[in-house]
Image: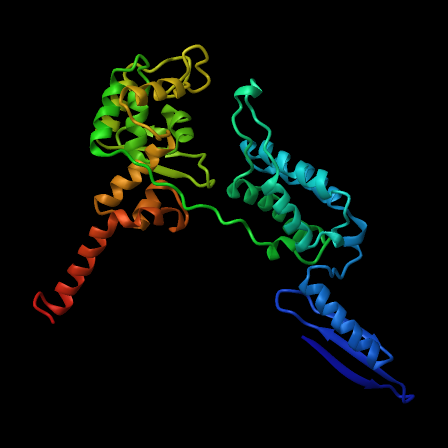
Length: 368
C-alpha cells in the first residue's frame, strides 16, 4: 500500500514523499517534486515488490547467483553433516549452471518457477552400467525437486539475514511440487512369521538380530548399523543414538527379543571394533545386509518391501496396539506429528476407546 504525503518547505516549494509498505517486506521511500512522478514510482515499486523484482540495496545488482552459491558452498556447506554435503553440492551446481550468471536482482520468483519446471521435466541420467538395460527414461520426483528448491532457499535466507546482499528471499513465493503421501507398507502377521523364519535361517547371522532390533525399536537402518556397544546400557535397557536424522539425541527402549539378542551378542563381542554389527572383512565399518535381506524376502515370498518398511511396521504395530500419534512420533524421533499421521487410520479403535472412556466418566454410561 502506497502513502503519499505533500510537503511545503519555507520557500514555498512543494514536494511529494512516497512510502510503499507491503506485509513481509521492508518499507520503500522516495521524494519527488511532481505528484505524477510520485504516483508512477509508487505503482512501479509496488508491482516490482509483488513480483519479487525489487531490491532496495545495490548489493543485489553487484552479486550474481553464482557468487551466492560459491560463498555458500565455501562458508556454510562445510558446517552441515557430511552426508548432506555431497547431494547439496550437486543441487547447487545445477542451479549455478542454469542461472548462475544472473544478478540476484534478476532472480525472481517467476524465473525460479520456470527452472523448477525445467528441473521437473529434465531426464535423470541412468546409473546403470549397461545403458541397454537402463529401462525407460525417468524424471525427478517432486520430493527431489523440493530438495533442490530447499537448498537454494537456504542460500537466499543466509544472504538476507547475514550477508545483506538482498532484502527478500524469492523462494518464499515459489510453489513447491506436491509430494505424494508417504506409503505405509507393513508386515502382516503371516508375513512377519515367514520373514523372521527366513532371517533366522539366513547364512548371515547378523540379519535376524538386526531385523528384530528394527522391528522392536523403529530405528532407521543407518542408526542400527551404526550402533556401538558404548551406546547400549543393558542394565537400563536402553540404547542412546547420538547421531540422528534430525540432529537430536534419541533413546531407544530395549525390550523382548531385541534385548535378549543384544545380551547374547554382548557375550561374544569382537575385540577389534565396538560396532554391534561389524563387517566381516572390514570390522571398522558396518556389515552390508542388503543381499541377505533381499534373499530372505524372496524365500518368504514377500514382495514390495524395503528395509525402511521395517520402521513403518514398528510404527504400525504401535498404532494398532493403542499408541497415540504423539507417542509414535516420540518413538520414531519425529519433531512434529505430520510424519506419523499416515498411521492415524490404524489407531482409530484406540481413539474411539479414549472418547468412550471420557464420555463414561463425565456423562455416565447411560447418558443420552
